[in-house]
Image 1 (cartoon, one colour):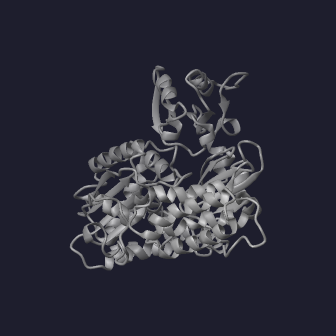
Image 2 (cartoon, rainbow, N blue to C red; image 1 turned 135 degrees about the vertical axis):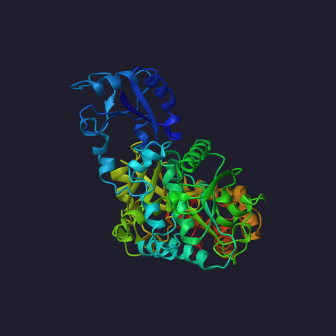
Image 3 (cartoon, one colour; image 1 turned 60 degrees about the vertical axis):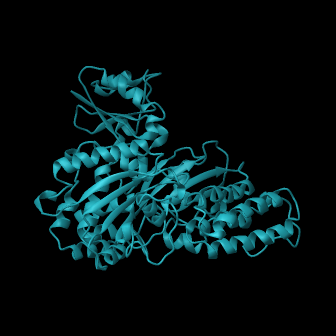
Length: 522
């Protein structure tokens, strides 16, 4: 049997991977495995064939149903030599692992993406899975928390709060019941890492949740998935069943006597439920709406009990920290930004996809070296980092480093690691308007600065773009941004001013001709 790997990832499926897989599965002697994506999205559908020489997998890019069998024949030939019209090899000599996109990365959280069978917990174990959980169960819970603290791991959902400190708070809060919740409501534009990991390596998330549960004394967990991710929800449900059957979840995990189980819940598609307290409200069966803090979820979270709420990437990183030791993870990165950052490269870019590197890579290296510049071939004008609430970084400032401290010092936001590239045809005045419009559409409506401020923001920007009393309306817009920033209950309203201010500061010409009196304190 010849093993052939075709991504079942939603991005690959959207460009025909399912049809390619069907053609290959019909060939006698083929053992078809649906993996996750490697992250080289511009090459999808990417088909990999296990080498008969033991030299790894041979890969072919942008395979279609018409070229699928030709790719298989080339990969299994004694001396494959594609000619005109044949499928294109990926990487040197077709070996995917040697592709520069992958060799330049430091993959920790995403190390198994595109390699492991996401439906097989034993394949996960073969590739190092469950080792972190075994080590955690051999340690006292407080020692597990200390390991996570020592690693320097910070929340990858956007806030960057130290993960170990959150766990310590949950563990120290007296309670008869505690919970672990994975926030998979990934709604930022240009982000897809949570989805890719759930679809391509779901057991990593479950292992991380089990370790967190042991560390804080929880017995129940929830994965909250946005409704726009049906493939991810299905993959997680399959993984939960398989892990439960194998003894990695359930009443007696790995014979330790420790009980922990996970339930997958699907939200209704509200962006605000990416905020942790709104997500908890939704899990409890109520409308997704921000809670006032304090108390924080670590003290009073789901059903009023202490709750670990972490992003998918955060929890999926924990197994490697326990398996390899916190020092190995902390060896990557810079300053207080320890470890690796998973970056999602999207927008008008030649080579979009998923990149994991140690903190400290510059935005220019990401966009130009990994991304290959714009897809249109035109100059880069702006790059938005951190989703729809992130700042627009002008081309002249692309040498900023992608770590928490450098981005904050420059006035930008790292967020969940979404990077969206724009060429020189973008209108940043219109993009600033979109930020306010997005906030107005997605606000939960609980606080006035966000609910009303965003609507007034759209109206004010419209007047500025129309040239109506521009100086007065610019002053009003700056005042409005300050009010939203300081008065909103959560980051929805509090961060909406960031893309607006960055557009005003770095691209004032897109708001029309200004007079000497126009401007304001940006």
